[in-house]
Length: 222
Image (cartoon, rainbow, N blue to C red):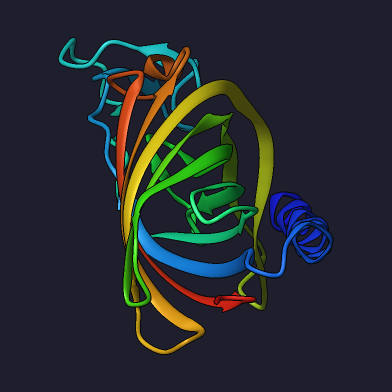
């Protein structure tokens, strides 16, 4: 939520700056649907039934409570805002996250990426444009425990308890093809590459590809 609020604030500042800068400039607001990929690092975590609950363990050693950690995948939801301050150059920001938690051994986790970019459009027409992105940002892997407690058989509660998060700096590049359906509405298939320092502590690699289909609305398109 805090990343989304930040992007909305950024979008407001972009809109104000564009209005001040040029009548030909534009602001784009978009929502995205996609996924990101990384393999498992093949680590293990003991579940709550172990005397070493939630400690690291080695898979394949006969520890019946040792659960393997997953690879990264599943559905990601994104929000973004771009401002093209000239016909070719602009700035933008985006955040993508897993709306629902996934299993990470005996834990639950949710992955978030966010980045702020410089934009360049080497090819631009009324109906289609090619966009190149490059910038920096962060990756946040938040962890929690799902607890189910009952009083007899009459009252049961199920709740998630946060146990912390792992935050990393990332470098980001992306390429997108924006297809204008109307003078204001567009779709934008986009491929991203994230290089995330220390991300191999949670997954297999520091390199994370991502694919997203953005749907957006443009203000001020010429």
